[in-house]
Length: 453
Image (cartoon, rainbow, N blue to C red; front, side, top):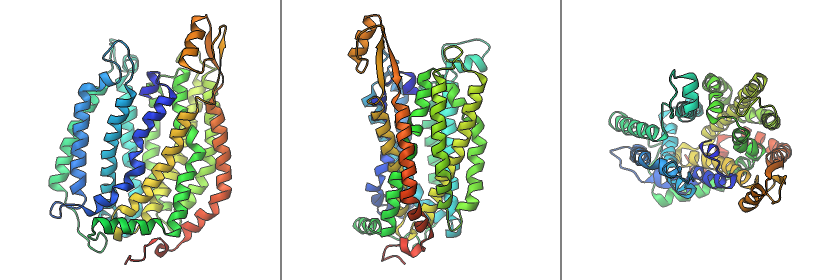
């Protein structure tokens, strides 16, 4: 949202989307996290503590330079997208390493009977993080929002700056990590979390990847999210492009917080049972339908504005309703998938199994989103109204403007991508739904490698 508000192109935003890819390739170093550790310190704390300290250091240093990186420190106002991508790629690489340690710790921290609740903890934690890092921050960072709702005397800046936000959370990371390091002890269980060498861990992981059930499930994870990729990656950006302030869009997430916290707990009653992926399959068609509804809302956003940045009450009501329903089905699919991953993961090989499934799931969401962001400009039809120029390049757009014209969009590629994605989703349901039901019904021994106890 911050990049869209700074008019960064969709191709540059596609480049920036690579910052999420460490979560999609963390499997490459997951066996290292599982096999290299300091016994007296703790198998998971060996990696959790230093990565969290380094994340804190990254945010602390970035807080002093973020204005320059975002182009606020000079007259050009140009975002250094390459440097920004590199910084957050490294930051997310540390977060992905932390995620591996947490995945493995969850399998031993919770009893086998309660391991399905790991998905609930994950979901509630992500909801809290999203609210603080997105909704809360965007609202308090916006001068317009603060002046309109929180101040009696207008000022040029919001209550919070990005630099100050990063500085504050770097301190929080330092403090909480220190508390975990001092007070939290790991429960050793050699039957569930055995010691393995690096090469043995990689060898076992390769054996797991070759299991027929795992191969089929990975194909499902890599392809299932194509159906919603245009909606998930572009809808918010298109609403901002239409003129909706980013902080107002973020405010819409506030009423959803109770739903996002309560829903995973409610769903866990079903996903902790023997067939967690039944919820996944039931939610998928509804989520695709909401993608079509979102496309209609984006179309309305460009045509019903009362004045720039202001929309009718019915539009806000429709957007809020669609967002609420969308969150219900997103969380239903997420919690059921995470519960299934926890159910079939073989804890005798540490966190690598869980990391494998979560990594493939992340990759299945990232690759179509990156592609949709990159491709949307190429299938968007534009023309120069009242002038000459092709409007497909910066030079062409400049010529159009110089000749007294203006570039207008005759057909937005967002709508084309949404239609294609929904069509792919319908075909996917015919292709893979029965296989997913079969995987859901398999005995746990079908998910274990041959050397497992």
